Amino acid sequence: MLAPTRSPRALSPVVVLAAAAATLAIGARPAAQRAPSPYAAHVAEYAAAFDAISIDPIQMTRSGRVHGWASGDGVLTYLWFYEATGRTAYLDAFVTHADRLLALRDSERGLPDFRGKLLPLWRTEDTYLGKQVLLRNAGGQVLASFQTDTAQDWRKPGAPGRDVLRVERGTDGRFALELTLFEGSDQRQVHRWTDLTLTRPTPGAKGGHYGPEHVEADRPLHRRRFHLRDLAGPDVTDRQPVSGEFELLEGRYARTTNTGTITFPLAYFARLVAEQPGLRANQPYAEAAARYVRAVRDALAAHEDEWRETASDGWYDVRPGAPVWNAGLDEPVNRYTIVGLAMLELARATGDQQVQARVRKLAQGFKEDLDHDARADAYLWNYWKRDSRAWTSPQPREDTSHAGVNALFAYWCHRSGLVFDQQDARRFANTWLKLSLKKDGEIADRIDGHGEGNPDVQWRWLPLGTVNPALYESGRAWIRRKANAPKPATPATSARGSEAENRRYRLGLASLAWTAAQLDRAATSPTAGR
Image (cartoon, rainbow, N blue to C red; front, side, top):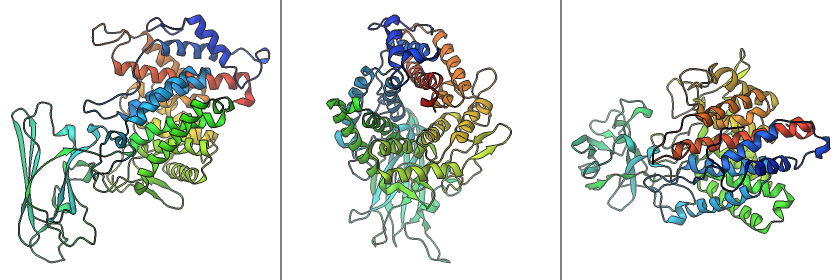
């Protein structure tokens, strides 16, 4: 048994064990025909430990934004425990929190994006966005976006005054910019650029620097602290910004990351209801599934202008003018494979062939970027697409945390019969077992084994334990170490430690429970397993 974090208030271990053992039989052979399996008892252990921790699965940032990764992952845990145990109480909890997430969309809260549009999305956390101001001409047309790199690099807590950009209008369409940033209580930075223009000079012309190519042009794109981006369309004739002093505002943009992380469990729930007659017959569940399908479709539609595809590849770009350094260029792989997970569940829930076709392109593009390590019979890949337009420098291998998103996407496609097969799934499992996992149980930072990483990132990899149970066993050893780790006893922590630690622990429990249930079904009824 896992060491108890604290005594469950509502369920005794005996009740949990009996309920889990009974519900695991759903969809399998009658009990009299089942061979003994240790996995049912494991599921009961995980459920008891999970139920003993009371925590809000939805996490908000200090500035009132939804933390996409934490919140989407947090509600996903209820679905994995439902599939592991069959207990609809987990679905009830999911619906409660999923409806809260719908109410927290920017469109519901009246939070416009950087263009002033209200979208049915969840604005990205501050730490991933820069500060931004839009430059306009005398007619009010947007000409350009000036932005810093991520906001936490420049705006320190307690800093006085405002971060401002002064625009000085010159002659012949030229202008100057002066940026004042406050880094601390007595620290201020001033940066100035002169003789700028938003009209590309003709070859050989003297004077005037095309702004977007002049601001920090000596730095690689991904290392620039400041960016000036030309947003004027071809029909804009007045390309000179008005003078004035403008405050840089916190970035207002919803990246595909938040969208995918939150809509994946929404579509997942809808798929469960669509596939299981007992759930379809439950009116509240059927109505909730319909709400979530609409929400997922609305969210995907809000990113439609960022979707890119070829005949055999699909990915997402960042919207031009967005307050991130790679605006107008491609997103890293994990930021669109997480959307692929949501798309895949939506396609399975609705039978939408157009959505499934996009999932196939995402999967094909990712598979083309995989390298085969013959010695380990494992896959390796990078953080960015092989032909990335955003990152043109030599790339290191993907980190083990974000790689978990990619591996889960590939495995989920395999389970749906799309692009990836059983051999692919085994190779992803080998990436973890033979390259990322070290002999002492520690985790590498990179999937090729380099660096020191965080063992808590492995929860997304654990479902691959269905194709290689050794991966499940390594995860079980990890969660037992977490259960037995010393707990700090301070007023700011719970019985298990910090809130962040509780969240990571619950994610591990949910992933292991789902995997153990799959292994149990495969062990006792081979025709039911994958």
